[in-house]
Image 1: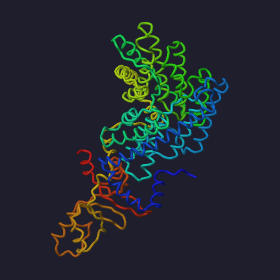
Image 2 (image 1 turned 120 degrees about the vertical axis):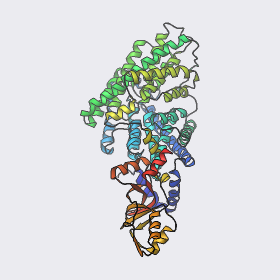
Image 3 (image 1 turned 135 degrees about the vertical axis):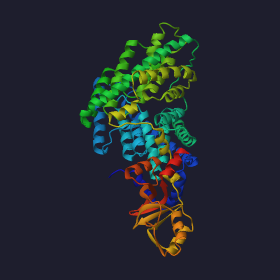
Image 4 (image 1 turned 135 degrees about the horizontal axis):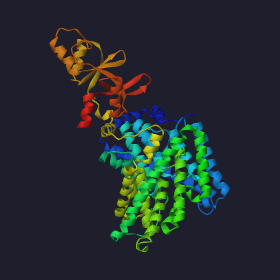
Length: 590
């Protein structure tokens, strides 16, 4: 049985609840306005709560399975035998491959990259199918020891919650985009008890404009999801670290070195994912995933610390100096394992591995700094935190999200100033020095897609046709008698939709009919297609559409105006208003 999409859910709702749909219809027109703050705030809270429940369920499922599989604690892959470490990722890859080939219907990219692609090309519409694939696929990938993170899947699950809810309610596409952003923020917030990082991540990575109407619902979504997280787990920071404050200029010298190193590793990380994904295009999808399982198994057999999320190893990195040979080897193996998993299509996240590699760079920096500085003045955890933030900020091109994440993960405000320095240096080295864009854009381009930020398109996407259309109109057959024409102009409509049969074909100004009647007092009948007037060719557009879609339809069809409709039944449309190019121009200019 095929999975239901958001539009199918909306049709199902209309059949069951016609009265509720009439109420929703009025709400849709209010939500279509760019300043519909209250409605979007309520939807943000609802999206955050739903996302919180889903993310908590995902974490409990993954961690519960790991606890049953692994001795002592849920990430103790080191305790597995060599053969188990070799085979476990391969078995996981085979399960994922079979599931995708059977149920994916062509979906190959998930995670944050998929959210960006749907926002760019599909107005933020995500599917229930993709939601299920991400939930099960990422859970299998993490449990089976692939070197992937859970944050990317959490973002996708949250974004899907917002999108599917908006589609089920039949909301306009500008509102669905806001709800996707709300789900994105909620997904990050519920990952690690990091609500502020979730808000900033949604704004930075999805490239949303700052406005109260956008910002408030995203904040409420992140706060709602985080509240659920704290209710189920606790409010303590993920990592307990001693406070650290930079007390001299000399303490900043290793921070500069750390930033340069993190930028170089970030560039290598992005290049490795790009190279693996490009080289793997010649392989069928099934064999790509199998190869990913083989690579993950080999890396796990040689160094089991690279398997899974690696939070147990992160705790060690935060506590003490480790041998530099071990750190360099682990960094190389983590880079190899993660690039293979992500580049070959394993449905996991890229943020967790970036944090892990950043922690290794930070510990290496602490080892080097201890040779020249008093190690007791600046604890190793200080450099590890800076490395985590620098790798996340540089690899995702999200410096504020990286900085906020390390502060919230540890409740250590002392890292803010040196964190800014390390993150910006890393970002400049990777972005300007090596010309690397974010990992998400790299993954999109590796799959033949792109993502470009255009301020005009952003503004057009922010507004729905329902909030801009002219509702003072009538629709009329082309031929009518004088009495009907006089009745028609009595209400002084701005526009008249001229029907030919059951199809609207032209839009003309209402004043043209009034002018003709006053100049031709003896005319007994009127042909609206014959009287002197401007007539604009019409094309339909759905009430859900954004102004960007309106412009695209006009360019594609050559229409000079649009009538805004919503199907009520096959062949029966309800027309809500009309939209001209001049009205679109006025909306985004003023």
